[in-house]
View (tube, one colour):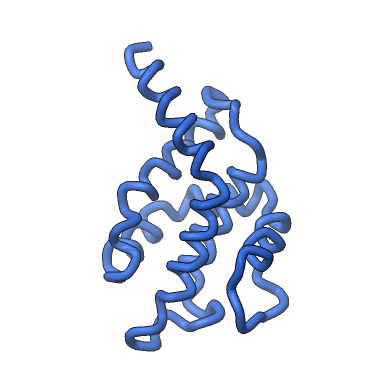
Length: 133
């Protein structure tokens, strides 16, 4: 996955990598929910994204089930990329480096959320409208 190593994480890096995500990557991200949750909850820096990660996983699941389809592929790919990046211990800044290891994960998640914020709001609105159904 993350073929050309880059020393700088920016919006262009995230957008470029998101375009490489395919359906198999989404499946891997979905199948790795427990590991992603553990990493987010145990990382310190990423803990504030715990609830958002649950919403993102909910969107992925509802999308895969075919019950929530009003979402662009770019949003699904962004969620999958963010989770796969978080799972990768040897990403741009390896996670085992104390104090620094999760900074790149935080950057990826922050950029990704910036791209999909309105889609997450739309999904939450949809969930509220359909929770009784």
